[in-house]
Amino acid sequence: MADESAGCGPLIVSGYAELADLAEGYDVVVNATSASLRGEMPPLPGNVFRGAELAYELAYGKGLTPFLQAARAEGVVKLADGVGMLVEQAAEAFAWWRGVRPGTAQVIAELTVPLR
Image (cartoon, rainbow, N blue to C red; front, side, top):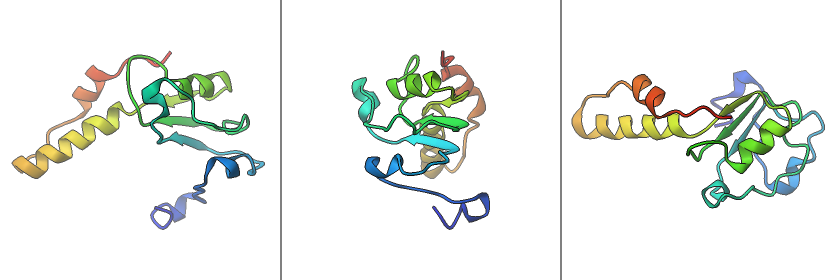
């Protein structure tokens, strides 16, 4: 993943303990844990969203997860959930089995709920 994004700037992957060490903050913060499936917040340091432009939650549902609520409270403007990932994975599976990749934009639009 780091090699593929080399032209975009550094990719920093770490455990929770190391997240607080980056003084300048992160551009994108991704929650790839299962905490949101239980309505919980992962153990993130308070400064993790400082300067972030996007908070991406791999879980999806109706409304904001605790992770996205925390991001919004810290001033992150762009929030995204895992609906797009869900639909794109389904389209890839369909293409693998049927040899045709269905369009996804309409399905994503219909499944997406406003993240407020």
